[in-house]
Length: 291
Image (tube, rainbow, N blue to C red; front, top):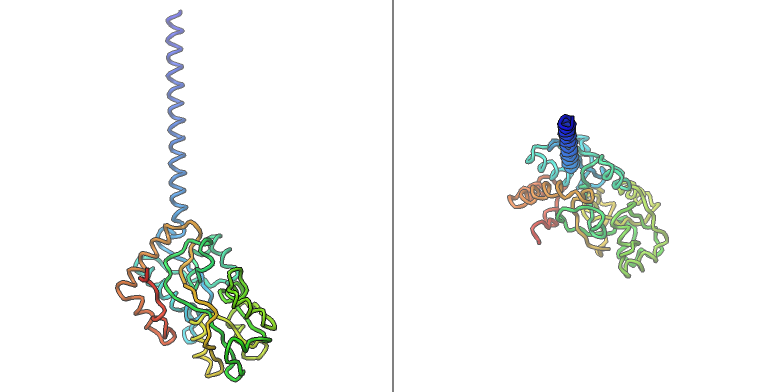
């Protein structure tokens, strides 16, 4: 009887060990699945290496805009992104966004990055950034016949900037220089407008008297204005453009940045900068390789 009980006890312990072992294997399987899911989550923005969604302001030429002839989205930044995708075998998705909604679009996963004349200065800790690729500056555009010749002439004037733009930060941000704070205080009003396109329409109509904006966009718009607009000689600030990825997404950043650097080193970036009349002057602003 005792022998029988002992055998039963051994059998029960063996069965328990077997089930315990199965439980541990399931736990390990769960852990492995979780790790795989985490790995997929870390690369989901690449969509398996097939699609790459770039968020951009569609009214920000020459970096991103709708071509008047083809009615297609184009621009220097979009051309760079297309070349990156071509080299990696990805499909480029061009996603126009409202500039003041860019963070929501990025954090929700609607877009993989913000690549459209995106200033990194003052935002260094808010995104995972590529290396800067363009040296930029903020300038002031006025009507040619306005009589405004210098920054001092803006005193008492209505000046417009784009909402959440580098121009706004340069004039009224926490890190604005004392000179720019003084300049801004001299304005009759500083208006925030959703897009530069609207701001320049308001300038032409006379409802604002100056627009502070990125020099690349200013050059494009002045050249396209038939002499109606002029850029003042004095700059408001200088800065750099980079590609902004969701905070912590170094994996995707590294792939795109590596490819962009290869494009710079083999001359493709310069070739793209010289590929259209609309991009005139951009080659002189490229700062890749200046580390």
